Amino acid sequence: LFGGLKFSSVPFYPTFVAMRVFLLPVCAALPLKGVSESCAEFGQSLPGALDKDYTWPNPTSIQHFAGKGFGAFRVPFLWERLQPKLQGELDATYLKGLEDTVSTIVSAGGKAIIDPHNYARYSTTGQVSGGQVIGADGSSVSIADFQDLWKRLASHFASNDDVIFAMMNEPNTMSTGLWASIAQTTIKIIRNTGAKQLVLIPGNGWTGAWSWMQSWPDSEGKLSNGDAFASFSDPGNNFAFEMHQYLDSDHSGTHDACTGTSAGVDALTAVTEWLEAHKFRAFLGEFAGGNNDQCSQAVDNMLSYMEQHPAWIGWTWWAAGPWWGSSWSSVEPNADGSDKPQVAWLEKHLQSAVVV
Image 1 (spheres, one colour):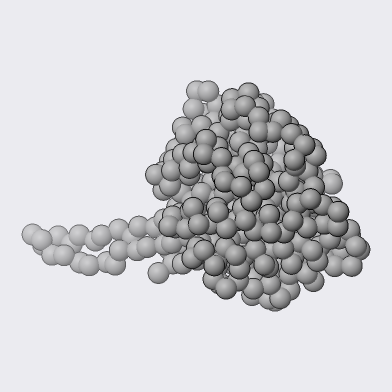
Image 2: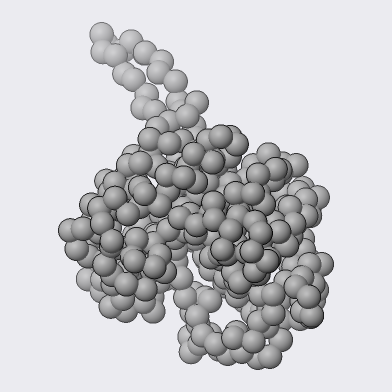
């Protein structure tokens, strides 16, 4: 088991028949490399209406990418839609949408990364923008509320080895120490359910790889993610830190221009050294670049760098999804089944060694 991804091989047994030698091929699982299939987290209204405020990924999109050799599919969803009342039952209809998407991914041979896309917040106002930070002073959203979500989710999917748990999307504007403590206690709750799957742990500050070693994301101004997570542990010994890295001038992913061909490598260098020093692993959950030569080279250089450093176990591009339209970062297949230009950049990096 490597990064939550199973690899298998069939040994070579020479069989002599009519003086010919037949060799059985080595078969490997799809790599932990793919796309975010985004749209179930869309919209401000809560709970919102299906196919008006939000929608689920198109099964043909998932099958399209799996057919090309992509093996990781990150599925963002909203906590409030899945669990309309804190510590209440999961909403059966929204859960069914998530289950159906997971089933499509697994049937296509991929890994489904389920991702509460909530920025370490939960809203009770009927609008996403009214969210309160988990466990913060004065917040009505407690750490126990968040742990209840994961107790239910982990129990529900514990028997499906092809599901990966992304604990939370992009915590930000909060205490880094608080978030690290929440993550540490929550992974124990997940393991107490018997779930053994890979768990992806984000940092504070929108979990930026470039800022992982900096203290400015901490609302208390004290700790970097590197400091806060230096002693992080998992009773199941199967976790990786999820990081995001955009290549534009402010690392936000809101601009299609990349700052240079070394932008990604430069952003990842310091945190890669930290990962290697602590014998940790990481997964690049979001990255993107506009359709231009500079971004093409920057993405190629970054993914090549990651391949040279096994601490990085995989990646997902942001984003695919049926409502992304003409967005510069969209890789959703065109109506005629053809690909956006950036897909070719990613296909170059899909080859994965067989681990026996």
